[in-house]
Length: 366
Image (cartoon, rainbow, N blue to C red; front, side, top):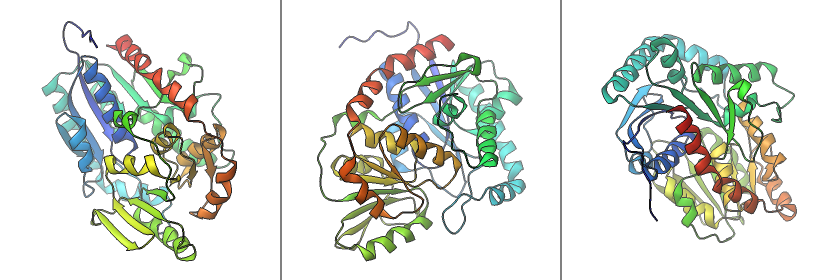
């Protein structure tokens, strides 16, 4: 296939919020699309807790220099739920580190002199754009910007949490030219709000996977404390095979607990391989994981652990991708599976339309 590149390669710099794996995989997908279209990703800056390393799969697949910097991250309670009070108190003493991070971002932008900054929902990215006013445009990418859309199904409960999530989203997008809102399906753009609806960013690896259906349930946990709920259900239902990916830093690459429960350290390629063959996916309502399951025609059970994920859970049920639950009670999933209707074909068509759509948005900004 003949590729037509711009006369001069456009240089792009990424800012990525490193909490979980969703924004990381979105950045990988975007880098692949840009590379195939003649753009150059000159650097990737990943924000997050200093003590939490960037997953190896990201270094392996991003194909660009990667720098880590200290950035605000969510703090969880013992039940695996986000504790906003603890999050605020935890970060107050660290403001000096965040000031250093802003300087680091500024120095990196000056060094690489990109034509465009793409911010994958990193708060310090928005603050940098507002405080330093760089001479380069910024566009923001995230499912969270869809919450500003008038047709999005916002949960009725949690007014304060809704305010905090939307306030954080505004901080990430300070001075941005556009907010590109990732969506499970097509909704109208709302330019007056700077909200432009786009298809999800899925890693290109997913297109070559062979879909099968084995008997195991695949689980993705973004916080190790949630594992206790999985183990409790497993001990009551040992006949159901489970493969569980979790983010425990000191965990073994693979640990077989017994004949039907296996734990896996977070690994992007291995996760997709297991997802392509599973019976269903159980996850904490992260947008990216649900998208990958929809693409592969896998039913999902989503268990939100904070308001943002509660929005994702409501949207998951709206498009028929699966069922929501308050706890990791996999019996709810087992009861749901017989009535699930596949949604993969419509979703794959929406994704196929996405690449040219994405490039058109970026071209309009650069």
